[in-house]
Image (cartoon, rainbow, N blue to C red; front, side, top):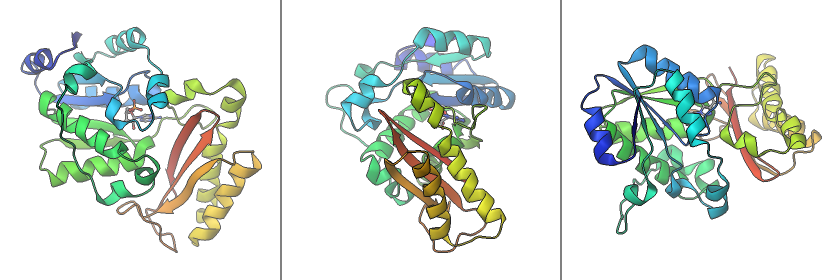
Length: 276
Ligand code: AMP
């Protein structure tokens, strides 16, 4: 497995590889990340994984500083997965003095996480355009865990005619339902114990839809109740949207997606689930 830390090394390495499957990550890998790597291995000649905590997608300096990191462990895990190349660029090379360009994403990027995390999706889109230009993958793999991010990526890849297929894979969950996330490592023991209630709230919404409920307000209220009863009161949003627009509709329809964002102690957790 090749380790590349500069753009030049990465470009040279890429030239040796055939059909590339790319898995962008911020490291501190878990089974969710590895599920993307495994699928990429099945579908392409060579897998490239980036480990890069992208500073321009963070709103708060604290969140960036506290983001968990385990570079050596991640590299060892990826070696075992048969990855061809790991790219760990330096922020100073990626964003040198004078860097002045951003991808201005609209549409779905303006909903939910958009206003909650100003600049986040522009930062994500900008780093991904850089990665796509340097690595030139045939396919790039993303997790449904970040459903809105997937929609934003699909949109700008299409809008900007970037020649890459975007593949979205299901959310990997712990046995108790908690969606895998690097941020879970920052939960205290007591918070970790409560965290599966996010998944339980989503399941409650889906159960009601299966029983025939279609009124969004009723479904959102029921999901919110599950959170509040478990003592999770710092709720950013609990909502159900049309997955094409990420806008809420009065009556939920086939394809509708429930999403929530909750602050649990120092950690902001997000999760989502298709209701049909
Ligand atoms: P991150 O390192 O959090 O930026 O995530 C890198 C990629 O892994 C993104 O495409 C995420 O959506 C995906 N991912 C993160 N958590 C999970 C999970 N629990 N299941 C599946 N994919 C995930």
